[in-house]
Each structure stands twice: as C-alpha cells, then as structure tokens.
Length: 263
Image (tube, rainbow, N blue to C red; front, side, top):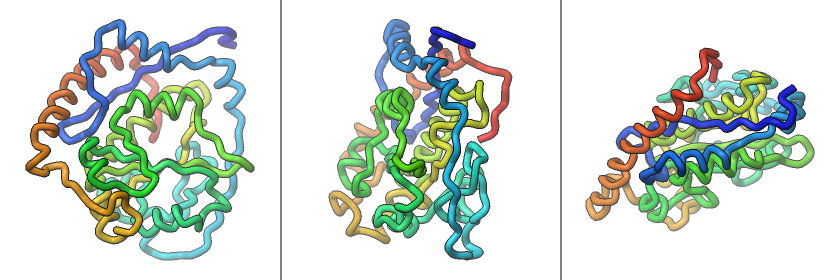
C-alpha cells in the first residue's frame, strides 16, 4: 500500500505577536522547496506503525502532580510528574525542579534523549538560556530536524521534548501544539502512533527557571522580550510573524482534513 509514493506535509506556523519563528517572505517556489524537503516515504512510515513504549515507574505520590496521565500515543503514562494545575490544562506541564532532575540524570533509566526547545526570539535566547537548550526560532530547521530523521534512543528508552518561552504562556505552548499537530498529520494513517508521544511544557518559562536555577543558565542572565534596547528587533519579528501567518493559512488549507485527532 502506498508503494514508492511520496507525500509532502505542511503545517500552520501561527505566531500572534510574541510567538517567535524563522520569518522570511516566501514565494510559491520556496514553499514548494520546503514542502519537498519535508517529504516522507510511506513505506518507511508504514513499517514504523508497530511499536512498543517502555513502561513508566511511579516512584512517589504527590497530590500536586499527575502520575496516571497518558502520553500522546496512549501507550503508557508520562515519565515525568505532570503538574495537576497549570495555565494550559490541555498540555502536560512540568515545573523547573523536574527539569533539573531530568538534566541531572534522575530519569536516565527511562529517558534516553531529551531536547529543551526555546521558543523565544534570538536576542532573548542569546541574553540567557537554559544550559543545552536549543533555539527553536527557525521553525523550518526544527521541523526538518525532528521529522526528516526522527530522534530515537537506545534500548527502547523514551525521547522527550520540553518546550518553553519567556513565561510559557504563548510562544512555548504554540510551538508545542504545532509540533504535535505536525506529528499527528504525518502519522494520521496509523493513529495514534507518534514520533514524539511524550512532550512537555515548562511551567513559568525561562523567567521562573532563571529565578530558581541560575547556576544552570548560559549565560547566567535574563533578557526580557520587552527590553527597551531590543524594541526594534521585537517589532521586526512581530511584523514578519503576520506575513508568515498569512502564508501558512493558505498552505494549510490545501492540506486540510476532516479527521479530528485528539492532542
């Protein structure tokens, strides 16, 4: 089925005001080129529809956290303790202490790889970020990295993505939803399979992490988005975001589907 056929996937890069992205004026040719780069062999994807996820160990019980919330492919529960109350109840959210535990190897017996994805503007990222975090401003590069050759870990351990922005109120949650939407679209023929079933949002964003764990920031500083000396950059990125949003709506409408898939 679907032998020797390719299909390209597009995706909505909706960034209202403060949502950071890689913005550029794109012609139809450049959009087609990007779509070609995001082509996937159905043969390869079909062979990956059967999979198993490792079982999660529950080591402690705390009413502040969820321990039985299923991950995106419904194969098991989250490895990391998910906050019971958060600003985005539809997203699995962790606190800064849990992220520090992850970085320090507390969950290395269950999690083989993790990426900390920073959705802030480049000047914010350069002004201070979580150690080993990756700037996800250039979304095209991020999507190609995540989906052209999906990350895998050894020994069947899980791969985890952690998203955040300055406060984890807008840009981080948007990026998290966009990556999940892309993952669902790519794997819609073998739902609920996902390349990245376990993704998290960092509560309070970089600001809260910086305030509680300064020693784990590089450099050890914090540059707000609304910094006076960077207002021109902020306006530039916001203006570009509106152009990108219009282009993405047109592209996504061509690939719209009537199938509604849960997050």
